[in-house]
Image (cartoon, rainbow over all chains, first blue to last red; front, side, top):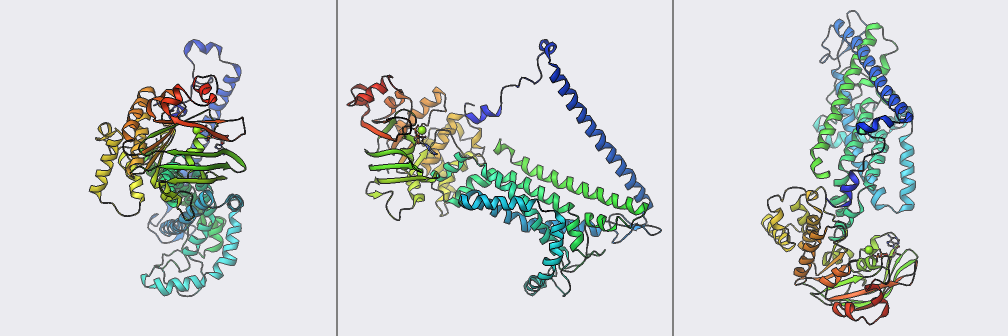
Length: 329
Length: 259
Ligand SMILES: Nc1ncnc2c1ncn2[C@@H]1O[C@H](COP(=O)(O)OP(=O)(O)O)[C@@H](O)[C@H]1O
Ligand SMILES: [Mg+2]
C-alpha cells in the first residue's frame, strides 16, 4: 500500500509504548507512576462495577424469590402487597413501543437536518442552526416533561382525531377522546428529546465525509443529492447508527419526562392512543418512594431487565456496523 | 467521441484572490496535453475550470470562455452537472468509493445518468471500461470485492475505468501518478497512450520526463511571485518545449534552473 491513508493508519510506535527488554532499565519514574495510576484506576473501576452488579443481582433475586406472579408475563405491579405479585410485561411493552415510535420519528428527521446543516445550508445559516441544536441537547429532561404535560398533551387532540379518522380502522390508532397521555405521546416527546443528540452526532459524521469522495462523485456528473447518496451517506452510515443508538439508549432510559406525561396503568391496550401503559424507568421513578423492602427489590429487578435490553440493543448495533467493516477498512 | 477545447480569456478566483490570469489555449481532440509549472501556479485550478469543478470550492469563481467544440461550458443555462458528464476527471489521490465493490465503482457514473440500464448492458460497459483501463485481467475474478482492497496503482486505474465508463469527450488528470510507485506510474503512462485514441486528454504533472513521454503538446505555467496569479507562459509541441522553447523562463524551468 503506497497511498497516504494506509500509512497514516499505522503510526510509528510511540516512545512510551512497550519497549524491548534491554531498554526496560531506563524506564523513567514519570512513566512508572503513570502506569501504576492508570492500572490502579482500571482495576478500581472493575471492582466498583462488580460490586454494583453483585448488589443489584442479590436484591433482585430476593424480590423474585418472593414473587407470586410470573415476572415476565404478569400484567400487574403489586410488589408491596402480601404476597407480592409483579411482572414486567406492561413495562417492557411500553418501553419498547414508545422508544420505537421515537426512533421512527426522530432518526429520519435528524438525518435530514444534519444533511441540511452539513451540505445544503449556507454557512451563515448552518452555524447558528448547529448552535441551537447543541443547545437543545443540553435542556434538562424535566423541562421537556413539563412542556410535554402542559403544552403537548392538550394540543395533540387534533392529530389524534386525524389519525383516528384515517388510520383508526387499523385498531392501533383508534382514539376515544380523553387526555393524550398515551404511549404515542410519549413516543413523540421522546423523539423531540433525542432529536438534538442524533442530529448533532450525525452532522459531525457527515462533515467528516472525505472531500475526495465527494469530488469523485461530482466529477462523474452527480447532482448534490447523488453526491450525498454515493459518498456522504455510505461514509456516515455507521456513525448514524451509533448516533441512533445513543438516542435509543436515552429514550429507553428516560425517566422524568415520561413520568410527568404518562398516566400509568398496568394494562396493554390495542390502541397506541389510549392513555395508560408504563415504562421501566417511569415505573421506578413513580413507585420507588412508596415501596417497601420487597417493592424496592422488585424495582431493581425491573431495572436490571432494562439494562439487559440496552445491552442487547447496543450489541445489535455493533453487529450491523461490523457487517460492513470489509468496505470501510 | 473526443472534442476540441478552446479556452479564451479565462480568469479564476478563490474569493478575492485571483489564481489564474487571462489564459487562452486550444487543445486538439485525440491528443495529450501536459501542464507543467512550479507548484501554486494554478495548474490544478485551470484544469478544474475545464469541467466546472472550480466553482464547487467555496468562493470559486470563473470569468471567460471554455468552448467544447461549439458549446461554451460557461454559457447561460449550461448545467454544470451535464458538463461534468462530458468532461471526466481523475484525481491526484486514487479515490474509489470505499463502500462500493469494484463493479459498482465502475458502474457508479452510468447508474447516475438516470435512466435504467439493463444488467447485461451494464456488465458490458463495466467489462469494456476495465479493459480500457488495463485492469480487467487483474480484477475480473473479484468484481464484487471492495475497490479499496486494490493496490494504489490498481485503484487509480479503477478510477480511470470509472471515468471512461460514462464515455466522456475529454479526460482531465491532475497528477494521476504522483501518489504511485514507478511501476504503477508506467502502467498509467502506457494507458494514457492508448486512451488518447478515444479521448482528448489533459494531464497535470510535476514530472518533466512524464510530460515528455506521454504528451503531444506541453503548456508551461508560471507565476510572478507568491500571491500573484498564475499565467500561461507558452504552449507548444512537447518536442519543441523540451528542445527549443521560445521563452527563456520555460528553458530555465525545464533545465532545473528554477522552481
Ligand atoms: N481551495 C483553495 N482556496 C483558496 N486558494 C486556493 C485553493 N486552492 C488553491 N488555491 C490557491 O490558488 C493558487 C493555485 O493553486 P493550484 O491551482 O493548486 O496550483 P498548482 O496545481 O499549480 O500547484 C495557489 O496560490 C493556491 O494557494
Ligand atoms: Mg496541483
